[in-house]
Length: 401
Ligand code: KIV
Ligand code: ZN
Image (tube, rainbow, N blue to C red; front, top):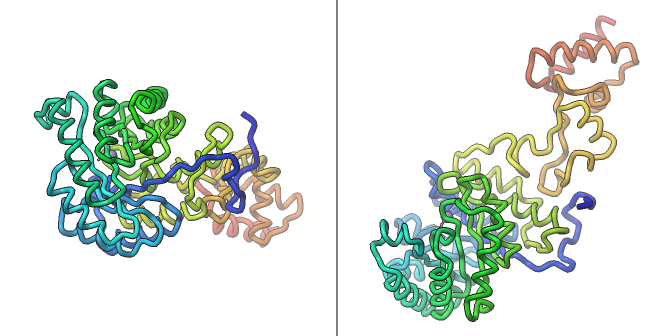
């Protein structure tokens, strides 16, 4: 596992790699996050950015859910320049018809229809037999396929569905015309190796499975959504469903920025690429955080405030000598202007001197040492020493020299 140089936006990452399609569901599963609802204008702004950054499929909403959702999906369908625009529909005739109407004006429309397949959902939620669900799949996928050429079918709660029955369901969906088959880990229950095996097994056992693209859709209830997503790709999935900042039902979905950078940084073990322009990830994160009113945790991978910040003396010293000592990707590759060396009680002399230089101060050895002692004293009392604190401290040192 030797590390290659950190990625930069100019690097070509496609050689000898297979494409994985990125399906963003920030506007559907993400918006289902309690308290994350967005206005029409906010949804348009998010969709425009997703389209511009190279997301392959945008799930724009759930048209039957409300008039507002229908209007947002229709408007996004009409304006999208590159992405496939999908709407979600339950396996109900009226839902599918409404969804078809909403995505109709897209250059590349998709209907995404789903039904539960696990015993617990069949018994307690749907009150239907396995045979009845099979009949529903054949009928509703065929209906969707009559409206558009691009139909995704999802087996809700796939990871808690017995494999024999799941294979029968997938076979029925492909036979009825589904072009993408999604096997969601709806309740975030799977372990990575189980999810990888599931994809291998279903693809091997279902006749004509090569006629469809298989898709992963992972929830983060056990904090495994991204790990499971990448495992599913190893198992043969070629579409990843994810959301910006990992927004989504309960603990959220797999975070788009994490899977995109996982593919880019670890191409040695995952020989796949996505078309997403990674340098727009930070901007997308900030936009989604603002419109959803969901703050991004400071230590969030890839887009968190501290993702490229270093405070400890050892790390700061290493970073000043060679950034690869403590960074596996460059901040520029995800749209952050530069690494930040945060001055605090763990910072060392090397970083302190560099920081002062950056602020325009060149102190002699003695003055530098005095200032460093005073800085350490201040850092013991304050969590972070800001540039203004340092400037005041050094100005005082110079005045009293
Ligand atoms: O988590 C899930 O199963 C879903 C489906 C609607 C795809 O969001
Ligand atoms: Zn979901």
